[in-house]
Image (cartoon, rainbow, N blue to C red; front, side):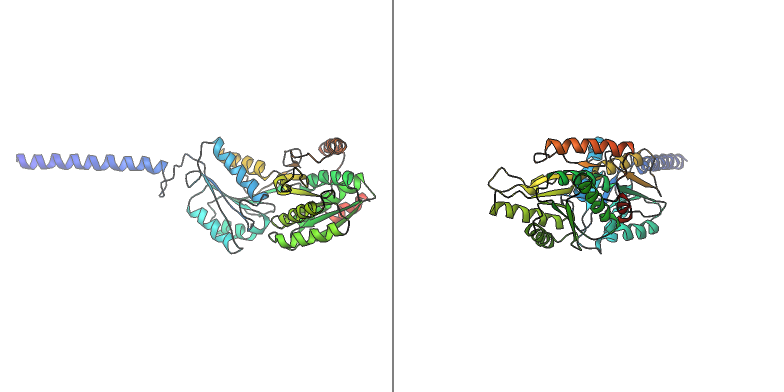
Length: 362
């Protein structure tokens, strides 16, 4: 009888231990996913296009924004915080997005319009995951679309080019001709001609965002024709524009030729080795970092704008000119300030399409 009671008591103790263990595991499961992630963290990641995370352009700017979000929220790089995956080809887009979904990131960015199709497909396959796309619109309930008024920032650097060209010949080199890059081209032309109606703007498209050799040869042809300032919106192809300008400056130090960078401050690409010279006139900033950080904060607060288009312009500090202005004259800076106020007030609307440009009658 005593043995039977002792056995019953032991069984009750073991059962209680099992229940307590189960309760403890339940609490841990509330805080950790199957891969050990702390769910108290709002995790963010991004997939680059083929330009890579160090493209000195919008991929790098986006990564900067995610890093700043991580720092502000006490996160570290990795599955518990923030991360990125680089794409070497178009085939990597969907694969990388799915990898980040499986790693349970709560917000996943596709950086660049080239990822639009992949983001749309994966968003349909993963309706419980939240995505964001930069530079285009993906009309899905679980996708937020980030766009910019690139024509506004391009107009401002066009004002600088129009005022500072000595030959009245300036150039624009785009990557792939598209609705997006047209905004850069048209805004730039409008800026140049608004302050210098005698100027000529030559436009060329490389057909690729990652062909520095094409950028270099195109720039060489332009400079040979008498163009003295080139604005590029060509991603990695634009690095070749800088290379050509630096080499020409080395051959003829007295020649005044410049490049206007894009998306981020590209001044370091314009440094002329062995001298204090820099052929960067300025850069048009497209603050992808500001937009990515802003949207990440909104999502963290439970305000993810799925299915909506968010546009960043001058008023939102989404576009502008870089802090590097060593080669920009006081006259040009004053003009930039004046035109900025006109744009902000609505007195002047910068065109973003050929049709809008034609209406200006420049």
